[in-house]
Figure 1: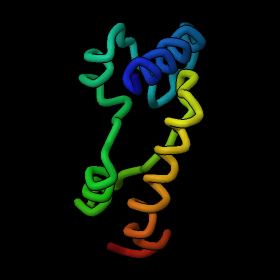
Figure 2 (figure 1 turned 45 degrees about the vertical axis):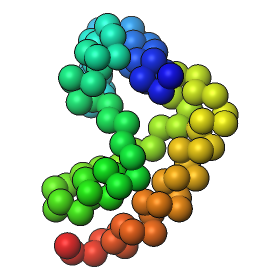
Figure 3 (figure 1 turned 90 degrees about the horizontal axis):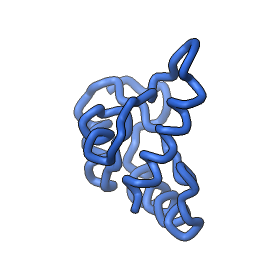
Length: 97
């Protein structure tokens, strides 16, 4: 279900951006599998999210819990997971790694 919601979100953004500047998450994906291959959107577990930050790359985390009309219950679950299992493990903003 999550993949379909993010696909719907990126398809709508692609329609809005048919002409003019493109956003960093622009994707011409036509299926969930296509969207996964583009890397424009990643759906991660809390441990995968922590590992992404811990590997030393300049990762930017963007939580988008209501993408594509995500049901409230799923959005709340995602925000809760992020707040309890990811945020406490992140370095403070501005800290050198």
